[in-house]
Image 1 (cartoon, helix red, strand yellow):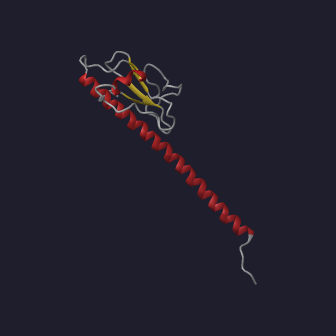
Image 2: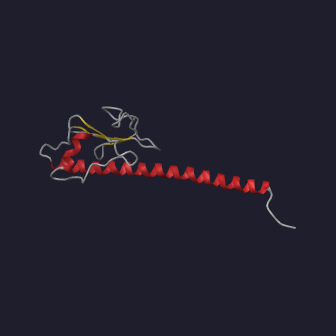
Length: 142
């Protein structure tokens, strides 16, 4: 007599494998989101450091006024940052920067997993209508 698996046994094994694969997929997607958020935070910290160096070298002791587009002064001469970072998920998406008077600023991004601020002062958009939920400012202030 031949020994073989019954249909029920095969279905049970297939179901267990499917559940394990679904769990692994969810974990993988969550890790990707956390990784991109960590990159966003590191990008903003890098820009924050460049802004502090810019302010310490400027004759008036101010940060660049304006928005993200005005931060190209950081990549000029002298060079405070190699290039302005782009969002890891969507390279056309830009981070938020606002400094109305050059004395203070807000850097912001839209994180996928956690939030640190509801809306930066001076606007709710992180460049493409996306609401910002992570904010930074000058060292010791925000």
